[in-house]
Amino acid sequence: MNLFGFFHRYRPSRRPRAAAAIAGVATVGLALTACSEPAESGNGGGDSAAEGGQVTLTVYTSEPEDKVDEINAAFEEANPDISVEVYRAGTGDLNARIESEKSSGGIEADVLWAADSATFDQYVTSDDLSQLQDVETSSLIDEAVSDDGYYVGTRIIPTVIAYNTDVIDEADAPQSWADLVDPEYRDKIVLPNPAVSGAAAFNASVWKNHEQLGEDWINQLGENSPMVAESNGPTSQEIASGSRPVGIVVDYLVRDLAAQGSPIATAYPSEGAPYITEPAGVFADSEQQEAAEKYINFLLSEEGQKLAVEQSYLPVREDVGVPEDTPALDEIELMTPDLDTVTEDKDAAVKVFQDAMN
Image 1 (cartoon, one colour):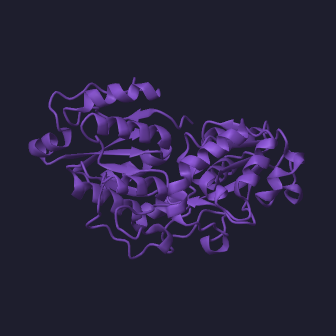
Image 2 (image 1 turned 90 degrees about the vertical axis):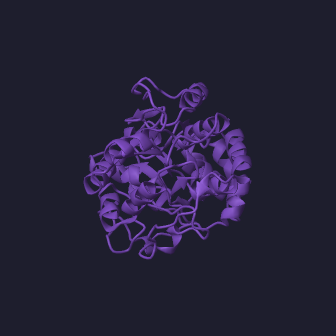
Image 3 (image 1 turned 120 degrees about the horizontal axis):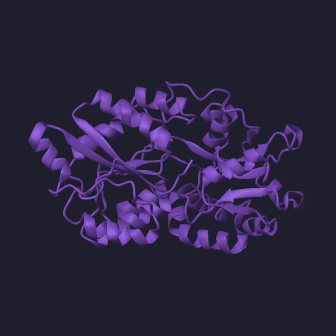
């Protein structure tokens, strides 16, 4: 599965400044060959609404292609007056695109659905997000709800230790982050690149600021010469293939591969698992705030969260169950760091992590 640079049903010129913005982001290496031709008029969403009551919503996301397609099909069926266009990329590339668009006049998307709270806090600080006005959060777990109301979590995605069951017996599998620095795992570990993966960047900051781990643990992990894959997707594939039989990866990908018959299993680390909530928020530049909030409400609804569970995610509601063969959320030890610290230290943590892996 290609998790980067996927351009899906996206028309680049929702507003007149789009051509300049897209020229700017070409430098980050995203594949734009699948784009349709720019619309002749500027604001695609406004024009379509005026012509026939149809609203076009543009979503920037790091969600896997098949999963976001399934969500959008269900949303459009429930909201036939709203069509969804998606731009997919890794979080690092999404951030680069957004910054390029800001320098060219304004952000071209309506909804950001990706990454972690720390990333969203940065957009709140720079006034790039609108405060949510009509998003229902009363049925959500506390971990999903932000204090300031600018974004809301849509899934619980822990990062775990995964291992190939053809190579490593369950009794011998690593059960803690500390286990991974044992020399027996030298040249056997794979993990995602924090410069590309939002979850990996968040994790780097959590680990760096964890009292039991810190920079010493990161440096010791580097001494085991782990392979740095481009993202969580390739990381999970390396583990499943056995070429690197131990890895650090988001848990839902392990469930996906195990369900397909791959020899892969999960260990939730004893020190706790860092996790992201893959928040959703509305850009301040959006002209479709109402439709954008309908989209977010759908993600949080019972229907939307049941779809999340079917897609192997842990939900942010307690009334929709959990994926098969998965512990309930309250049975998983999660790391709960200070988010301000994680946000402020993320860039420094990514550098520490990259230096240790080289």
